[in-house]
Image (cartoon, rainbow, N blue to C red; front, side):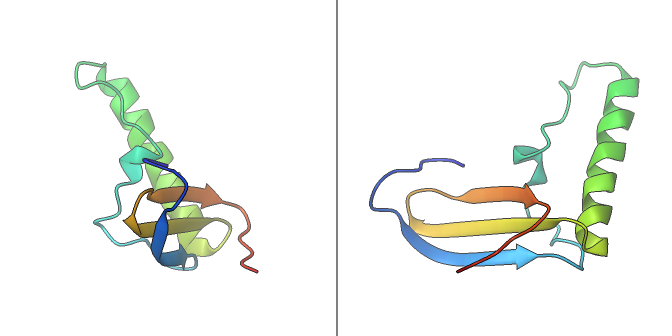
Length: 85
């Protein structure tokens, strides 16, 4: 979450599950890649981790929550279960 503060105005909440998230979703905010100078092994492990998380969202065992605000914080969260009340 970035820039969270009292008075945030929520623009939209989207829960992605059972399908692959759009390509423009910045998953690197959740799954930070290794430093560019890190050994290739770490980059391959990171790519495999991202693919596993995407597969979990796509098969419905995980959900990606995307909260966008018109003022204040944005949120990306990878969850096993989401319940909106």
